[in-house]
Length: 112
Length: 95
Image (cartoon, rainbow over all chains, first blue to last red; front, side, top):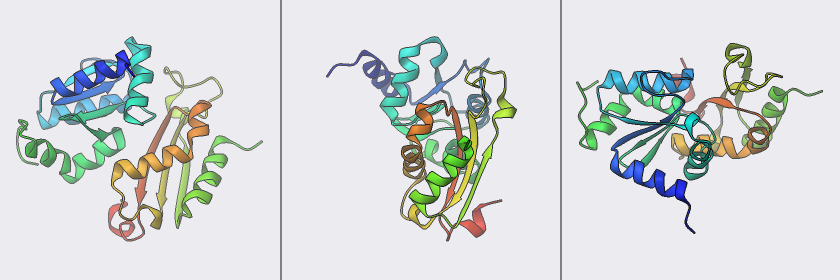
């Protein structure tokens, strides 16, 4: 069954190694949870692409269904769902997130 | 009337048989922003320790909790911060 929103998401997460679905954008996050993930990715120094779900109701609902995950933000690395704000924060604090990105061959500023 | 926090706590207790369960209503901290409903009860934080999480990764644990609380998400639960541990992990990983 064809679903244009799912097709768009598949394309996003395939063409962008680090893809963040969030509220607002990296410059102006519109939610504290989204802001925290932007801050973590920025601190790690990995390039990332964002999509603002507030600008697109179909995407806002679609990403929740696509990921089987009811909340925003959502982080994808190399096409794989990593998690939302809690998981990204935990993985950052433990060093797992930087390790994952490095393992996937992505540029990170320094090993944590 | 039972609050959403009460419903979340009883649903999680019956689903996961946790050894530790804390449910905090943090809606007041998010009042006024988009997604914060007029009646509050939109933003919650749950800390739960349950043997049921053994062998599950972070995403699977969270999905299990989301599934148990599907009725709450369908009726205005907007944000759910989760700290999910097994009893073996609990002593060292909860700050």
